[in-house]
Length: 370
Image (cartoon, rainbow, N blue to C red; front, top):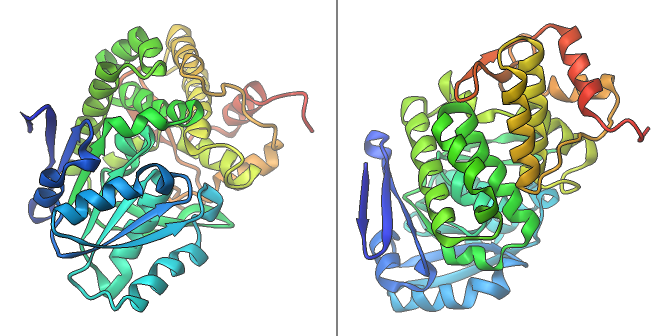
């Protein structure tokens, strides 16, 4: 369901009593009326990082104060490598020191890492306190802020410790993308491309036609990309909130991508960069198994490259690749599960013959590195 008012778009994630709005608009971070409407509770803890805080924390705090809120700031280091137990504890340290009770609302002001950690903190603190996502990166606006997946990384696997915990609202301010570095914008475009590839072939066509505009941060193009991505993700989450089946298709490119992240060390590649490359690999594998034609495989590689994302994977060695991909939440009984396309615009979840997988690894990895 979509409503439009005051130049902002409001979508709804329909999960019964856990339903919530996604508000997409410009300059929402400094709109006290918007914040008053969607953020309950008098005391709020704003969790952000050292990159976002100097850009947006003071104006956001001012708007929250104007909306009648008392603000407790919590500033964490920036980066995937800090999405860990130690930094999760820092959130709890401040909440306990400030005597935060069950009425306190946790607000995630930042990208996917901040959103995942703040959500997990909210799910766990006093066994659950209210939580609002205020995503400031494209990746978080189109993907990680929607759907209630929260968690931290473990040295042996990405997002292995966490909880399903839905926010009370998602407030996506397109103006926050003005300060987003080019590589972070590209990382978000990976998840936009993913939504077209797995569910909506017409949206994929639109992305191909508008990729230059998206890379150039054209406001109208970004607004549509965010809206359509959120609509697609919200519908999948509505049907399968806890990832019992269908929702796993949102992991297209992620089995390879998570292996890249864990294999190189968290933070070496951005999550979206790894997913972009992972989609190229999953497309190659889909083509090898006769599920998509060579034209579809080429279209995916071309749009991933045009988005400014890597299309060649690091050479981790076949054995290491297989070992890393076996640590994946989708796997059952030691079998690696892949999300593949059959055809472009439709995804399936399947296991694959080992020889085809090894052929894809050999074809898609850099050859000039040990």
